[in-house]
Length: 190
Image 1 (cartoon, one colour):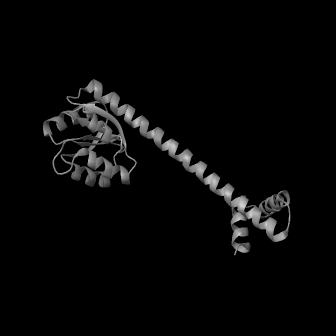
Image 2 (tube, helix red, strand yellow):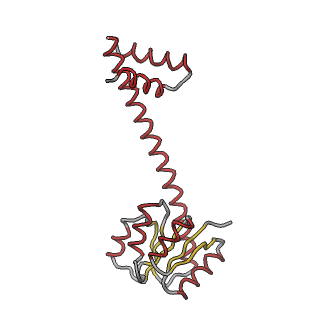
Image 3 (cartoon, helix red, strand yellow):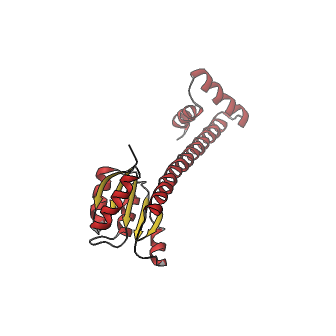
């Protein structure tokens, strides 16, 4: 099964044409909407892999809908518009926009844009995981350093002895240094 795409375009003929192009290219168009409000509703319900969204639509425009969706979900959005004005491009940078297509859209421009958008989304998720892991390691390191400081003060020992004591407890109890640090901080911090 192809990647799930939500198609948001207020002109039904254009929407139908885009849906045919996407289906022909092997994508699964899981939902269609004609305005930003419906796009938000369908995003919550369907959780697409990619949203292709027109900028100028009734009720709520694509930029506003993109911003709302980006605040809640990490779903890439490919914008469609008949306009290539700088103000739209500047506003588009504020949401999770990964591409920008000017209408009329051909299959030769749509498919590569979709592929690049989906690839960029995968890379963004990978980078976020790396950042989260690095932040967790830093947090753990700070907790270990703080616990080491508590032991140094409490038992009047040097840094190396405090660290060795924590390491010995970690090995004897077969728990992580983070768990040892957490226990020390709970037991000895006031």
